Length: 206
Ligand SMILES: [Fe+2]
Ligand SMILES: [Fe+2]
Image (cartoon, rainbow, N blue to C red):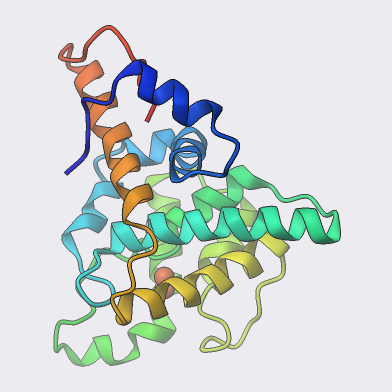
Protein backbone atom coordinates (compact mmCIF):
# COMPACT_ATOMS: atom_id res chain seq x y z
CA UNK A 1 0.00 0.00 0.00
CA UNK A 2 1.37 3.45 -0.82
CA UNK A 3 2.36 5.33 2.29
CA UNK A 4 0.84 8.79 2.08
CA UNK A 5 1.31 9.95 5.64
CA UNK A 6 5.09 10.53 5.57
CA UNK A 7 5.89 13.72 7.45
CA UNK A 8 7.80 16.60 5.97
CA UNK A 9 10.64 15.96 8.44
CA UNK A 10 10.91 12.36 7.26
CA UNK A 11 10.95 13.53 3.66
CA UNK A 12 13.65 16.10 4.38
CA UNK A 13 15.77 13.38 6.05
CA UNK A 14 15.43 11.19 2.97
CA UNK A 15 16.24 14.12 0.71
CA UNK A 16 19.39 14.98 2.65
CA UNK A 17 20.62 11.40 2.97
CA UNK A 18 23.95 10.87 1.19
CA UNK A 19 23.18 7.37 -0.04
CA UNK A 20 21.31 6.70 -3.25
CA UNK A 21 18.07 5.78 -1.58
CA UNK A 22 15.04 4.11 -3.03
CA UNK A 23 13.38 7.44 -2.30
CA UNK A 24 15.72 9.33 -4.62
CA UNK A 25 15.44 6.72 -7.35
CA UNK A 26 11.64 6.79 -7.14
CA UNK A 27 11.68 10.58 -7.23
CA UNK A 28 13.89 10.58 -10.32
CA UNK A 29 11.69 8.00 -12.07
CA UNK A 30 8.58 9.99 -11.19
CA UNK A 31 9.94 13.36 -12.28
CA UNK A 32 11.26 12.04 -15.61
CA UNK A 33 8.08 10.20 -16.56
CA UNK A 34 5.32 11.98 -14.67
CA UNK A 35 3.06 12.28 -17.72
CA UNK A 36 3.34 8.54 -18.47
CA UNK A 37 2.80 7.47 -14.85
CA UNK A 38 -0.23 9.71 -14.42
CA UNK A 39 -1.82 8.56 -17.65
CA UNK A 40 -4.49 5.92 -16.87
CA UNK A 41 -3.42 3.99 -19.99
CA UNK A 42 -0.01 3.19 -18.51
CA UNK A 43 -1.72 1.92 -15.37
CA UNK A 44 -3.30 -0.83 -17.50
CA UNK A 45 0.04 -2.60 -17.04
CA UNK A 46 -1.10 -3.27 -13.45
CA UNK A 47 -3.79 -5.59 -14.82
CA UNK A 48 -1.31 -8.10 -16.22
CA UNK A 49 1.20 -10.42 -14.57
CA UNK A 50 4.77 -10.48 -15.81
CA UNK A 51 6.98 -12.91 -13.83
CA UNK A 52 5.85 -14.81 -10.72
CA UNK A 53 3.38 -12.56 -8.91
CA UNK A 54 4.88 -9.33 -10.25
CA UNK A 55 2.67 -7.18 -12.42
CA UNK A 56 3.96 -5.73 -15.69
CA UNK A 57 3.76 -2.26 -14.11
CA UNK A 58 5.89 -3.30 -11.13
CA UNK A 59 8.36 -5.00 -13.47
CA UNK A 60 8.72 -1.86 -15.58
CA UNK A 61 9.31 0.36 -12.53
CA UNK A 62 11.93 -2.13 -11.30
CA UNK A 63 13.64 -2.08 -14.72
CA UNK A 64 13.64 1.74 -14.62
CA UNK A 65 15.29 1.62 -11.18
CA UNK A 66 18.08 -0.76 -12.25
CA UNK A 67 18.56 1.09 -15.52
CA UNK A 68 19.23 4.26 -13.51
CA UNK A 69 21.61 2.44 -11.18
CA UNK A 70 23.50 0.83 -14.08
CA UNK A 71 23.72 4.12 -15.97
CA UNK A 72 25.19 5.82 -12.88
CA UNK A 73 27.72 3.02 -12.58
CA UNK A 74 28.76 3.29 -16.25
CA UNK A 75 28.87 7.09 -16.06
CA UNK A 76 31.26 6.85 -13.12
CA UNK A 77 33.49 4.08 -14.48
CA UNK A 78 33.63 4.98 -18.19
CA UNK A 79 32.86 8.71 -17.92
CA UNK A 80 30.08 8.49 -20.49
CA UNK A 81 26.76 10.30 -20.37
CA UNK A 82 23.28 8.83 -20.57
CA UNK A 83 20.01 10.40 -21.64
CA UNK A 84 18.30 9.58 -18.37
CA UNK A 85 14.91 10.90 -19.42
CA UNK A 86 14.72 8.57 -22.41
CA UNK A 87 16.28 5.78 -20.36
CA UNK A 88 13.53 5.92 -17.73
CA UNK A 89 10.69 6.45 -20.19
CA UNK A 90 11.88 3.63 -22.45
CA UNK A 91 12.27 1.34 -19.43
CA UNK A 92 8.74 2.15 -18.22
CA UNK A 93 7.23 1.37 -21.61
CA UNK A 94 9.47 -1.50 -22.70
CA UNK A 95 6.77 -4.09 -21.90
CA UNK A 96 3.73 -1.96 -22.77
CA UNK A 97 2.15 -4.86 -24.70
CA UNK A 98 -1.14 -4.82 -22.70
CA UNK A 99 -2.29 -8.42 -22.78
CA UNK A 100 -1.92 -11.51 -20.61
CA UNK A 101 0.89 -13.50 -22.17
CA UNK A 102 0.17 -16.41 -19.78
CA UNK A 103 -3.14 -16.96 -21.57
CA UNK A 104 -2.91 -20.38 -23.30
CA UNK A 105 -3.62 -18.83 -26.68
CA UNK A 106 -1.44 -20.27 -29.49
CA UNK A 107 -0.32 -16.77 -30.50
CA UNK A 108 1.21 -16.24 -27.05
CA UNK A 109 3.74 -19.01 -27.79
CA UNK A 110 5.77 -16.46 -29.68
CA UNK A 111 5.22 -13.67 -27.14
CA UNK A 112 8.96 -13.47 -26.41
CA UNK A 113 9.69 -12.59 -30.04
CA UNK A 114 6.73 -10.39 -30.81
CA UNK A 115 5.99 -8.33 -27.68
CA UNK A 116 8.73 -5.69 -28.19
CA UNK A 117 7.03 -4.73 -31.47
CA UNK A 118 3.59 -4.71 -29.86
CA UNK A 119 4.84 -2.61 -26.94
CA UNK A 120 6.48 -0.16 -29.34
CA UNK A 121 3.32 0.21 -31.46
CA UNK A 122 1.18 0.73 -28.31
CA UNK A 123 3.67 3.26 -26.95
CA UNK A 124 3.68 5.21 -30.24
CA UNK A 125 -0.13 5.20 -30.23
CA UNK A 126 -0.52 6.43 -26.63
CA UNK A 127 2.57 8.57 -25.90
CA UNK A 128 5.18 10.79 -27.52
CA UNK A 129 8.10 8.42 -28.18
CA UNK A 130 11.47 9.58 -29.44
CA UNK A 131 13.81 7.41 -31.52
CA UNK A 132 15.93 6.43 -28.51
CA UNK A 133 12.90 5.33 -26.50
CA UNK A 134 11.74 3.35 -29.55
CA UNK A 135 15.11 1.58 -29.75
CA UNK A 136 14.96 0.77 -26.02
CA UNK A 137 11.51 -0.79 -26.40
CA UNK A 138 12.13 -2.64 -29.67
CA UNK A 139 15.54 -4.11 -28.79
CA UNK A 140 15.13 -5.03 -25.13
CA UNK A 141 14.66 -8.76 -25.81
CA UNK A 142 18.05 -9.20 -27.50
CA UNK A 143 19.46 -11.88 -27.93
CA UNK A 144 16.04 -13.59 -28.22
CA UNK A 145 15.26 -11.08 -30.97
CA UNK A 146 18.12 -10.90 -33.46
CA UNK A 147 18.76 -7.16 -33.85
CA UNK A 148 20.95 -5.85 -31.01
CA UNK A 149 20.32 -2.57 -29.19
CA UNK A 150 22.20 0.27 -30.84
CA UNK A 151 22.32 2.84 -28.02
CA UNK A 152 23.95 2.65 -24.59
CA UNK A 153 20.57 3.39 -22.98
CA UNK A 154 19.03 0.41 -24.83
CA UNK A 155 21.86 -1.88 -23.71
CA UNK A 156 21.39 -0.81 -20.10
CA UNK A 157 17.61 -1.46 -20.19
CA UNK A 158 18.27 -4.83 -21.88
CA UNK A 159 20.60 -5.80 -18.99
CA UNK A 160 18.33 -4.40 -16.25
CA UNK A 161 15.38 -6.30 -17.77
CA UNK A 162 17.23 -9.65 -17.49
CA UNK A 163 18.27 -8.97 -13.89
CA UNK A 164 14.72 -8.00 -12.85
CA UNK A 165 13.24 -11.03 -14.64
CA UNK A 166 15.55 -13.37 -12.69
CA UNK A 167 14.76 -11.69 -9.34
CA UNK A 168 11.02 -11.75 -10.00
CA UNK A 169 11.04 -15.38 -11.15
CA UNK A 170 12.90 -16.46 -8.00
CA UNK A 171 10.87 -14.10 -5.78
CA UNK A 172 13.88 -12.05 -4.69
CA UNK A 173 12.53 -8.70 -3.53
CA UNK A 174 14.85 -5.99 -4.82
CA UNK A 175 12.37 -3.32 -5.89
CA UNK A 176 9.28 -3.21 -3.68
CA UNK A 177 10.34 0.02 -1.94
CA UNK A 178 10.84 1.96 -5.14
CA UNK A 179 7.56 0.58 -6.54
CA UNK A 180 5.69 1.64 -3.36
CA UNK A 181 7.17 5.12 -3.55
CA UNK A 182 6.29 5.54 -7.22
CA UNK A 183 2.73 4.42 -6.42
CA UNK A 184 2.66 6.94 -3.57
CA UNK A 185 3.68 9.68 -6.00
CA UNK A 186 0.87 8.69 -8.36
CA UNK A 187 -1.69 8.56 -5.52
CA UNK A 188 -0.62 11.96 -4.23
CA UNK A 189 -0.68 13.56 -7.66
CA UNK A 190 -4.17 12.17 -8.26
CA UNK A 191 -5.42 13.41 -4.88
CA UNK A 192 -3.94 16.80 -5.67
CA UNK A 193 -5.71 16.81 -9.02
CA UNK A 194 -9.02 16.03 -7.36
CA UNK A 195 -8.58 18.61 -4.62
CA UNK A 196 -8.16 16.01 -1.87
CA UNK A 197 -4.48 16.47 -1.11
CA UNK A 198 -3.08 18.23 1.88
CA UNK A 199 -1.47 21.57 1.00
CA UNK A 200 2.01 20.07 1.60
CA UNK A 201 4.02 18.13 0.62
CA UNK A 202 3.83 18.90 -3.06
CA UNK A 203 3.23 16.08 -5.50
CA UNK A 204 6.87 15.92 -6.60
CA UNK A 205 7.80 14.71 -3.11
CA UNK A 206 7.34 10.97 -3.21
FE1 LIG B 1 9.90 -7.76 -22.48
FE1 LIG C 1 10.71 -6.70 -19.33
